[in-house]
Length: 331
Image (cartoon, rainbow, N blue to C red; front, side, top):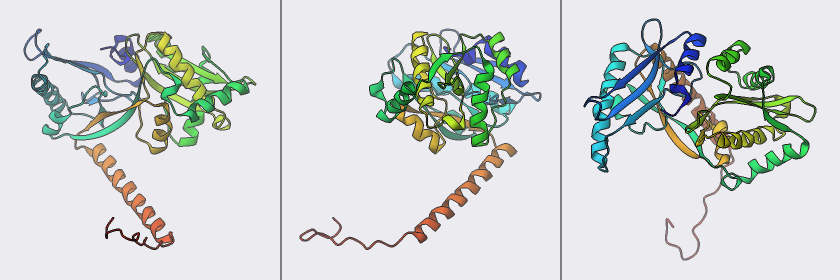
């Protein structure tokens, strides 16, 4: 698997920092020459499988036998995936488990009576060029460049953390990351893999930061990012991402996964980069956490519907347009 998330180093880091045990689940139902499914999960103290906090997804790779017949590949996938589904049913899962965009057929989990929910992300293929992106992105990046902002990979983790704290405070969430946690990642996984980018203002103030997981030959993963409030409109965020994309391409990455495009405001920003929208499926069991999320979703739906109804009632009525002369009704 050509992702940092599948390496022993990343597993060791996740085990130490988050206190969960890596579990390798591989299946070859027809022997070594048949289809193969390889995956890395994590387990809590009760043995339940889980997705560690702020890990983009669980690495999973399916390799069919050489064939050009699509129905054979589909049959092999269903046969092999069922073994993983059964293991998940026996072990139990905690919370939702998200799989990579490469998993396009989640039906074995539906047939196993798990709840399957589509999540979304944006994928950018390399080489990235500005003609793929909206001109607004380029204008913002040029704005920061003209103002004297400078982007680089950094050894100053405190600069990066100060930028992450800006977004966390503004948006009301927490990565749960600390200076010790980033230092541990560098020690166990490596600085060439956990790449820390920071854009500094002309005065030297860290304005925005982005931490990316990179493995040559694979798609880089956007792990954490943040921007200070006072630099939100400076163009520093766009300048830094363009710098990171160029650096990752030169380092041997095949593309970039923005790791999430489900929040509307975030999705509107990410689509400007011209990537491809991809689906990644989240698997949930029917435990109290799943019911809590479902209840939260229902409450948000009811609140949103009430707001839309209020806007409709407050909007001035517009008279229906009369059909143009000679036009038949309904056209």
